Amino acid sequence: MKNRIMPQRIMNAFFTAVLAGLAIGLVSGCGGGGGGGASSGTPATISPPAALTADAGVQRVILNWSPVAGAISYNVYYATAPGVAKATAIKVADQHGPYAARDLVNGTAYYFAVSAVNGTGESALSGEVSATPSATPPPYAPTNVTAVPETGQVRVGWTASTGATAYTVYYATAPGVTKASPDKVSVAAGPQVIDGLTNGVAYYFIVTASNANGESAASFETGATPLASPPPPPPSGLTAVEGDSQATISWTAAPGATFYNLYYATDNLVTKNTGTRVANVTSPCTLTGLTNKTEYFFIITAVNGGGESADSAAVSATPLAEKPVPAMVEIPAGSFQMGDNLDGTTYAMPAHTVQVDEFYIDRYETTYDLWKEVYDWAVVNGYSFDSPGRNGSLATGTNMPVTMVSWYDVVKWLNARSEKEGRTPVYYTDSSQTIVYRTGRVDVTNSAVKWDEDGYRLPTEAEWEKATRGDFEGRRYPWGNDLGTGNANYNMGRTVSVGVYPPNGYGLYDMAGNVWEWTWDWSSNDYSWAPDGIADPRGPDASTGTRVRRGGGWSYGPDYLRCFERVFRSPTYAAPYFGFRSASKVP
Image 1: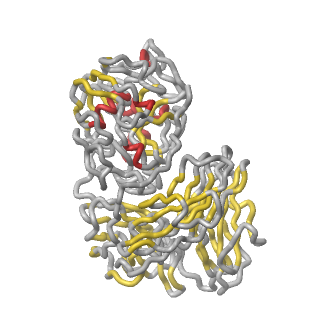
Image 2 (image 1 turned 90 degrees about the vertical axis):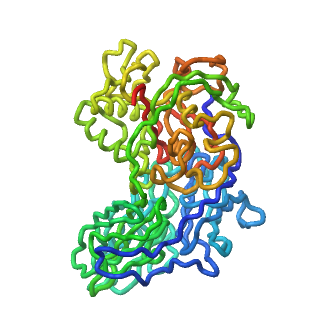
Image 3 (image 1 turned 120 degrees about the vertical axis):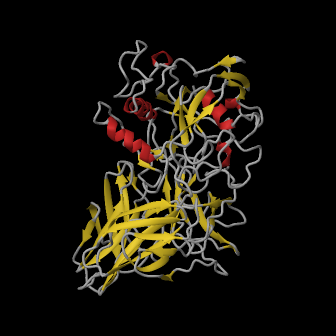
């Protein structure tokens, strides 16, 4: 069977998602008032992003750019020839980095530029970058590169790149460092100390990642100036806890610091140059007056007589009036039309009537907190997993869906959740249903599942589609036939907290957007195997090599939000836009 990964189409953005402006919050327990730093007001004009990177992948290019103060969104332009221009390039509007340009041709060079948008209009284009998708791409460039000045040296750190086997740090005494720089550390390990430097001289750094496929694009550039009496190191151990219109940030004290500054923004690449500053704060610091359902990113700097430190690592929190509490929702028994003829999509046809028994499904996508609670119990009770999971797409944030989990990981985790709560596990290693599936990669068959027990399981494709439609048939999206605005996360460039976007007719959140969700079924090119009127279908009985995922994700564009959309992946696959939710026969 042909594995449907993506259709060839341009993902034009119709959804206008406007991030809330940087609120000047009230401060509690922070030992000082706000002020200074970047302004939160909308400027009369706006500049394009100063830094832009392009990382080649398989039939895709990942773009990331530096935030622009006052920007509410960004437009991406690209072409297959240099000299990208607004009038002639392909435009993808209303995006937030990182942005994935998909459905590209391996071996073809693509050229990109980005503009910033605010209430007064659109900026000029950024500088142009290029990348060539490949079937065997190198790793992505390191992110979150930091440079901490010390006496006669600089300590350079970064976030590891998946698949990288080596890193190189390039540096120079002038901005605009490239991989041609003669000064480099070829076998670097973060944090890498670059010593033998001259105090009082500014140095600039970039980092690349490498593996057998080659060297990545360069990271964003960062700089630092070694000093005989350097500023303190940045604080560590940052945490952020959300509340109603507020967030509380805590950190571990930095040696030698006399006070701290807090910076925050709604952009995940917040820096002390782009964030709103609250000066002279102490830990814990509660920032109030924030906008609920808007994600904020926070960094802390330490200050003493030597100056202000480099930026700390960022943490994030999404203020909410009420914290999402795991709960299951009843989906009543009944028939519905599965699939659709609306857009003539082959893999969604023929539309057919399906009878589904009553079942229950989680109101929210499985959060990392819930995943971690069960995972920690499971690994000391006979379970093993390929991945420990990730907190959302950025490994930070509150109430984020778990990501980076394979189908095998999820099925075992569901058994562990059942056992931990005293329910009967559903999945077994074979049709005798005697050995609970706890380890390895087992292609569990329909006959090896105790479908009528009270344990947790994945919803079948049919159950998932009935749940997402919210008891309304024949509509493209859970909310209607038109995409509309503010209904789902498909262009934010990252996951958001569960429960931010409106629920569907059954009271389920994020059934469209945020992260793709694993279902039980093996894939099928269409529904020719399912007769009209079929009851509780569970997909093809034999392995087709891939399992079905549903619901679209934060970087896939609006088409994948449609109720009938189905995309297939190997059960070993894990990604920062993949998650799931639990179903059960009983509440």
